[in-house]
Image 1: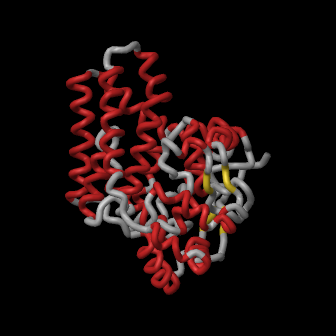
Image 2 (image 1 turned 30 degrees about the vertical axis):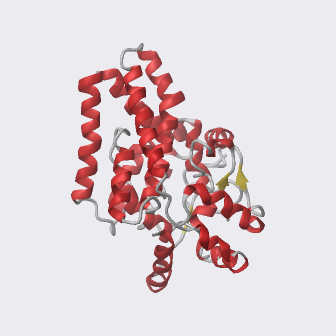
Image 3 (image 1 turned 60 degrees about the horizontal axis):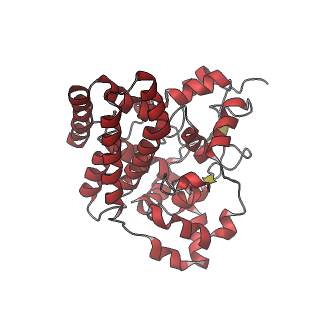
Length: 331
């Protein structure tokens, strides 16, 4: 099959601006689902504790078991921590923004690389400007499509090095503040944990920490999530898909991605209720029930490439109206 050399393009407005209005007209009770869930912070503490326990348990085990433990256990813990960072980015834990930022930093502290504060800024831009390359950090860059393409090896490497690839997109984002004291605090917490793990527990604990991160968002069935959310996997039109499989239990319903984009002010524990209220809309569009099958399909199906994403142009006048409305929903 010939290699695709460009993304898909659309002139259609982001559906996540319009569908929630239609759903609320029929189901105004959804507004009651919006709010904060302070109990989520208890999960932050639990997940951080589990990863510290994992480091301690693996610090004197054989080297071969370090990577196995990271793949079978650490990756799942880190993935949950990513979802908790995501919740804090949307200010869904506490009323005060700074408390949400601190919760995100705590969740990030055992994840080897600092990303919580930067993610919170880029992610809200993604919600307000989906598909616009200058503002949507979730979009692959053109060089990613050229380098990794649609071959199995290329896509496997793309998944394996996804944490590094995400960092490479930063220079493309011109409207996001890259460094301030919040970012500095994030760095101190994470790199301090890395140093402490190496000093007190040794290199095996340190490698376990690193491997857990790379597996959690890379070459692992959990990597199916990054394909599920916005890759064009059902047709050339639908740019957001949800996942309703069993891993939502450990991933805190992050698979409910259409529901989340439509109602970003609803915390993770109430997203299934959004789906139930809006089932007329959500059950009539394509969705996934297995991250593992989607992960394998992404790797081996040459029809899916890094270019299987939808892009739209940035319209300045339209942007001022649209992004203001979306920002209110995302905050």
